[in-house]
Picture 1 (tube, rainbow, N blue to C red):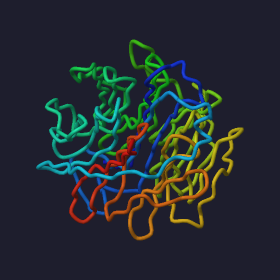
Picture 2 (tube, rainbow, N blue to C red):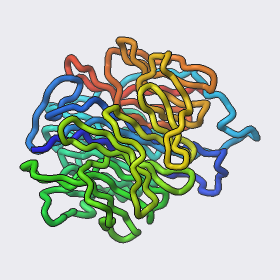
Picture 3 (spheres, rainbow, N blue to C red):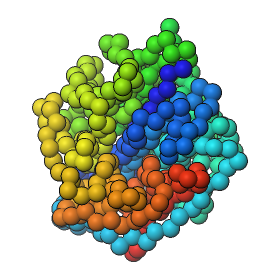
Picture 4 (tube, rainbow, N blue to C red):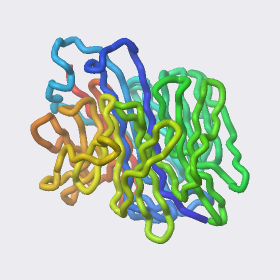
Length: 384
């Protein structure tokens, strides 16, 4: 069986759609760990039938109105967070792949694991609980527009939808010549303009290729793209209306790729063994690669920030170019903050960080202890 490190991404627009560009924040967080094999997480091996590897990926997005005449991107982000943690407990192994929330008091988290009973979680503002609706043991991606319209994708050919009351199976995907479809990421800018990316796979390892689907308001349909021996794992929008898509080719040593997608055609702009991550802040796409952050200009990577002299290792998620977070590693795991001037560590732990959810005054981070598989959700809140 071919093992995949998949990553998903999603975008959510909430609030007043008439808010000016300078008065909303759009966050996309994507984390892609090392090429983990056989569902290997935190350097501890774990094998489950037909459950591919989960590196982590993640994205989050939100709007909020500005009460200042100064553009939000010009205001350095605050750093006086109050940090708390909650422990997630289950009888069997599971791993949170992504989180998405309509508010800090209404957050969903999807997972893959041994039992489908442990793979859908919800936070109500007070505590995290497992949902009593059991969907799949291979949930990889979640994305929503509101508390009543949320999508999820899994590794068993299914796209799910939540209507505010119940989760239900919206679409069972099939494709001639392949055993299953794996949905790693769902992304869109309106309820009738959504994309899902991933891979078509055969259980015996006889073949795989990247797939892109689009939701037109009624149904999900495959887009006609070239047969590429890759798994698409993320997708973010660019300010010019195009998209960046991350992909991995698993032949021999894994080869990482980035494509520009204009809605119909793909153009490869990066190929290498170093692992990039794709993100979005305020309608601008960002790429992290080898301790540097790039933007895409004229279908080329253009250096934006060089953090080579710091402990920054990957990822960028936040509210503006003067208010975002990154991962740092100095022997311990660090949540670091950039305020337009410098990077500063705000939270340190022995746990390894994975997916995030970001709101106006809160951030949520899923983390796991690599020595004992203990799982926690870290919350940082800005006081009033």
